[in-house]
Image (spheres, rainbow, N blue to C red):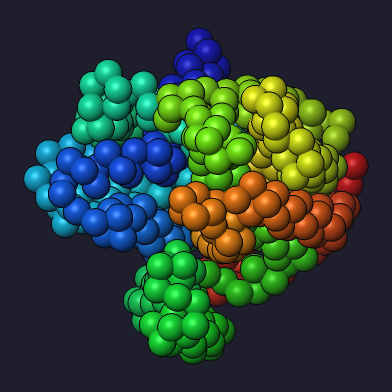
Length: 484
């Protein structure tokens, strides 16, 4: 009876984590297709309405690693409830926002919920038997991937039927109930890292992330050679150096740099950067390509809803690959799955480059993208979780999610610059622009595949060693698992 009760508790815990991570991921992409609708309803300009996306991106990038680290210290379940409550509050503010300023502020509040990713991985590591950690992490990763894609699919039907404000009302209800369920059912964290938050490090980390992501996101609008872009990029470099110096000297570092230098960690993060660059660009530009009117000589003239439905093969691929990833772990290592996912991504980008004349071609390419993302998300999360101390799980997985976000911002900016470089007299991009953009994504995908090959494949037993002042008694999970 005790064992059955424990298994039931784990099922409830998993459902809570899946709901929280899935809806946060959905809110990342749910708004993108309907920015023109929001612009018209709130009487604002095209440049201003893009801050609805930018504010969310910046907020999530700042809060994800910091709140993840707080969870490692004070308790992951408490911090998870806080993150979900912030996400629900942001949804409420967005649903009733009377102006674009209030909506942008609401999106900043929603960004605090980004910590649900690292907190969920940490809770799984704490609560689940070692034999089930890989499959549970892979399943949550699949939910994250599918949630991001599902937002693109659902945006059109929801707006057409109920209006764009229901893009926030629906998540508000689900996330609010999830926060209550997390408070009721998620167990207290058995693993905590003593110490204090290094607030100077937190400010410097926030500073260089904002100074980097802001010009990358706004470079096309501001001009890549403008003083604002160049100045912010220079400031980002200076703040990053100051942050590294502060972390290296800190008794209680926010992100332990010795942990980040572990071969399995830094190589996986490199793959995450490159994978994010290709993945987010596909999210952004495949629906845009589908909506190009046929009068331009290409495109399908699809509505928002039709363009979203074209992404369904990608969702199916993500879901299937993500669910299979954990079950395949005993036969195919996380590295093998990561490399396989990267190969799928290369094939998809290459296909989009040379074959995008019909919907079925784009659908097949989307399915390949989905298979790649499903395998890659699951394997990256498992590689990080397996190779860092339990007390650093939240911080390490939070930084991996952040690095993917940085890669996504860079990839989307580069693809946008290429696609829109030489528009038609009508202002629409030329087909050659999309072809060049897809070719760029192919190159990035090849780089990600090469980086995946550099991820260490063996798991060797090593003597315990000090990873950081607060984790001297903790051993990375990878040190306890024999090589496959």
